[in-house]
Image (tube, rainbow, N blue to C red):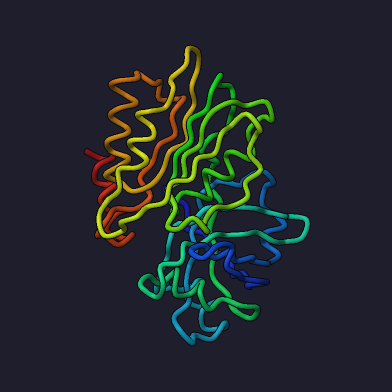
Length: 261
């Protein structure tokens, strides 16, 4: 018997600002956050977006009764349950996407729906060396994973960003080197992360990965890690977060179909 779906939580925007030129941080507030587990930074969540100019009461009714609002998948970047706060980072795509358009004008008084969080992507750290790679869409999960690592961790993290000014301050272990790669051409899929992972100095011992980004690059890297490096599945988090030329709804449907095949 299927369990009834839970109504998403209605959360308020406490603050919003550009963390970097192409990344917007939105701090959400609500009583529901006080009941969420600490340490869920890096976990997926669902953000439900109100229609432009939709009243809060009407949106709350829609969350409870339907129809389902526009929803997008994001990452819990920080959570402060004792304050009822969490931070979600949005890539600024201009007004091209509904989530980016919402985040660009988010301010105190705005609101959204929230469901989650899911499980963290790397729940245990036991490797001799770590390999992290992410584009802008996956920078929050990669940063959260780095900040959760043991302070004596060793490894390399590669970030593909839109502009040099999109570098962020990340509390990574001192032994993990951060490499910032600027994507010069955003009109076609990039190979920079693929090239960087291929050049990673693969050591003896256990390697754990946290790799996410555009699906065509992830598909190539998954094959490389599985076939060339024989990386055990339990040591490898790798996921396509978006696909070039495809909106999220279609990309998620494609991923479900591939998983069921």
